[in-house]
Picture 1 (tube, rainbow, N blue to C red):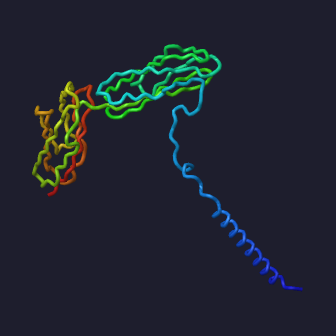
Picture 2: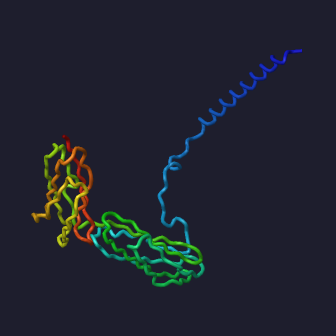
Length: 251
């Protein structure tokens, strides 16, 4: 009778051989398969109304373009009952308090349209904006109306960053900032506000050709970095202008 140890060794060899053959066949099959198409891995764009609902709009996205600071604008969307049964508009929800919506007709028969007037108040907002208004219906459904644009500030700063370089302890250096209007009717009412660093001093604005000029002085009162942001206010209803500053005080 053959020893058990010999039979066990042959069994292990057979198992290892079968495993190698299976692995090789799997790798060969994988190599023969075409790679996945690229669009499976790319993020897909977000569609506001990708799912069809009972309510539709031919143009649910409106671009106001570039608007002056403090603008109050409105746009009228046309919404339509695209279902085969009557529906009612239950509520309208805006994404922020700067946007309000008014629906002309809340009960719509199949195929009937209504107007939705959306009003936008920019307030202190500066730069690009994107707001939405959601219209909820019964039977259950939701239509998203989109409005976007960009608020151009009344005044801009040049430069937008001040570099004081390296200051010796006890020394001082000054830089100037020009505040210039983006439209002729813009009015700048400067309100003095203390700079965030006691080593800085902002002088009173001086009227020059093209706008106002501010003198910013840095004093080397203590060793260390001078890094931060200046907030230049133009009035209670006007967004501040931000100017970065940097430098270092050495002994």
